[in-house]
Length: 340
Image (cartoon, rainbow, N blue to C red; front, side, top):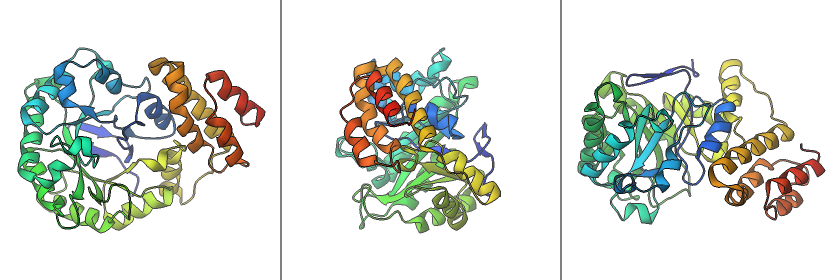
């Protein structure tokens, strides 16, 4: 059965359709609408371990649980084992359930230079020895908290560039360090988000991890999953235990329920533009609470452009969207268009 529960360490997730950690997008407002749209589990956008240890107030909002998230993961990035360990202890040691996750995920895939130059993100995939130390520090920090401990997982890329394909070494290092699940985006750091995601690498990783752990550690796939059919094909072709949606969920948080319908029944319902726009308005409401109206309305311009894909007269609509600056502007615009 392609749609099924997933076990990550001591956590059981009822399904295997996840929202990936997406920088600048996976805030709790977007995670909330994706949860309503059928996502079984979601990851925060990446949080700096260094900033956490320094006591930066800006990191707190990135980690806050959405009201409808019974379980979620906080993704951390960093290249120093000691700092990563301290960050995990800080996150899990809090008494506020709003910011204590059920999973800690380590980012070893981000290709952005300002991240990689610090030794974090996909730099770790290039250096499996350091990756091992970072993951081991996080696992040890979680274990030291006793009944507060949570599983530590990791997301990697296929390698640094075409000459340094190191996913296998990185995966083995992560397993040895105690990672409870692995996700791979099978592009190199040099590819960024260009070119094609190589799902054959995902299939090889699934087999490697199954052989090494007797199936106790799940492997999840990410990359080029834009439709329910893509997700179905990834599960069928690679044998991975779960699928992470990133860009595929932007403007369509209902892709999760659509995918579940496809996996369970062989077909799925189309989502009406009015339903998508209402989800976007709900996301706007949530974002205003967290970021204030001015910032939220600016951030929602690109998000509403995604929500408007496939709408009749979409080009003209998007021109009006990028001019909106208040909640009232958006509501009036969509009411004029008959979408609210």
